[in-house]
Amino acid sequence: MSGHDAAPVPGRNFRVEIVDGNGHAVDVGCSEVLFPTLAVHADAQSPPAEEQLLLRRAANGDRLLHDWWAKACNGRAPQRRSVRVTLLAPDHERAVKRWRFRNARPASLHYSPLDAMANALVMESLAVAFDSVEIE
Image (cartoon, rainbow, N blue to C red; front, side, top):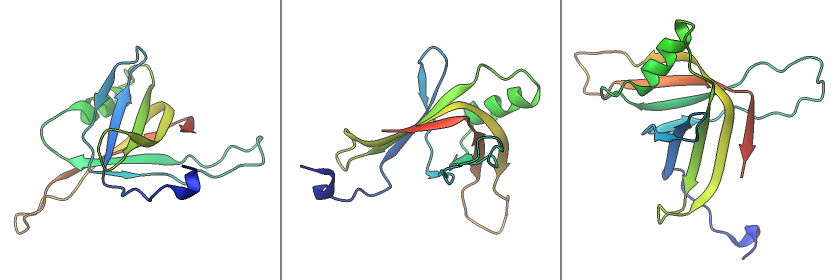
């Protein structure tokens, strides 16, 4: 089957992992990923404005994203990591497409508002800066 014959894949089946320098991957459990614009920049002398990857998930007490951000704020950031986003086929097994954001580091951390009158989940969002992206 050629790429033109492939059926479209829904964007709801995906996995987000943070990969350390030793190749150890941790599933982040994101509910939403907002990709940056991946533009072509013809002028290598003037660097493009830094685009960021946005990882969003329901806050649940897991401190993975917070701790990564806090270490970066305190100047104790661990070795830069990769963030791997994998789009899965409807069978949840096969990878349809994979994005690997290299030399990833936290840029900002945001929490949704707390509202005693609403019944919404508290969302945690981490903006991630990166040096390059590979798409498979």
